[in-house]
Length: 147
Image 1 (cartoon, rainbow, N blue to C red):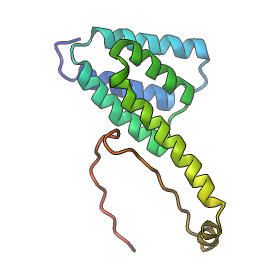
Image 2 (cartoon, rainbow, N blue to C red; image 1 turned 180 degrees about the vertical axis):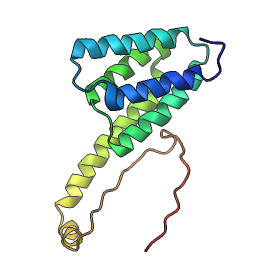
Image 3 (cartoon, helix red, strand yellow; image 1 turned 60 degrees about the vertical axis):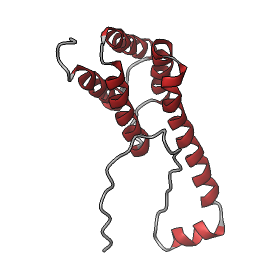
Image 4 (cartoon, rainbow, N blue to C red; image 1 turned 90 degrees about the vertical axis):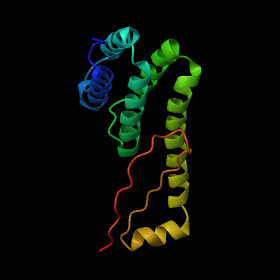
């Protein structure tokens, strides 16, 4: 397993697939068993930092695109990683969840204002995400071409 340099990326991609599709319709005990199996593989990895970096990329994509099936499963995975890696490593991942929750609250508060109602009446849907600098992985900027 450690002879291939891409193994950490493959395991992180497998985790991403599980959180997007694989855990659909699965009960809590089976979810815990699957996550335990992933953590057992993680314990055997020499490239743990590579896995964490790749996992962070996938997690940010799931959170921003809202493609995760279960928030509880995501939090369970964070708890398991915290046991294996320590609090400092997982702290940034946990703050990503806090950012999404804060953004959701701020967006709902904004939609209650009169300005937001006038924007919605014009047919424009507005949604903003407030992210902590340094906790989210850098992603290439998409070109914005206005019609």
